[in-house]
Every structure is written in C-alpha cells, then in structure tokens.
Length: 97
Image 1 (cartoon, rainbow, N blue to C red):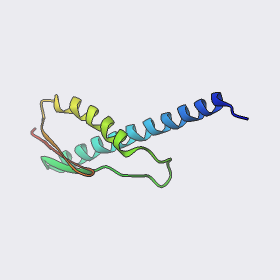
Image 2 (spheres, rainbow, N blue to C red):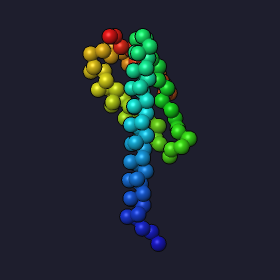
Image 3 (cartoon, rainbow, N blue to C red):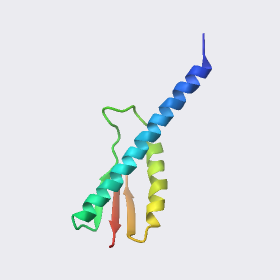
C-alpha cells in the first residue's frame, strides 16, 4: 500500500540534506578565498566537489545554481573584481585589496 505522505516527508528530508551540502560547499569556497588572501594571493581556484563520501548524493546542477546565486552576491563586494566559471566545476575568483 502506498503512503504518499511518508514519501513526501522523506523527499523533503533529502532536499534539506542537499541544501546543507550546498551551504557547506559555499563555506568551503569562502574559506578558500580567505586562506588565499591571507597568503598574499589575489586570486584562487575552487573546484566544486561532485560528491562527498560521507553524504547523500546531490544534483550537481542544482548545487551550481545555488553557488551561482551566492556568487552573484559576492560579486557586489567591492573587493571581488572577477569571477569566472570553467566547466565542468571550477571557479576562478580574483580580488583586489
């Protein structure tokens, strides 16, 4: 017998876990920028992970859409001067301090 309410709840839980992964990836990207800047660099490359061993799988394109929306906000920062995405999964970020 089907229980669509349980399936819906399970799907919502999966989506929430995926959103947490997207946020984790964005935090890693920000950390990469901070570490590179502290090391005296004015750019960095960040390779978006396609999966994590200890996490559920996630739709990679949805993750990229999430990152792109967050990066659009980063571009408004007066220090970020260039952001380029190289397919399939690498961001080049340049800043000037």
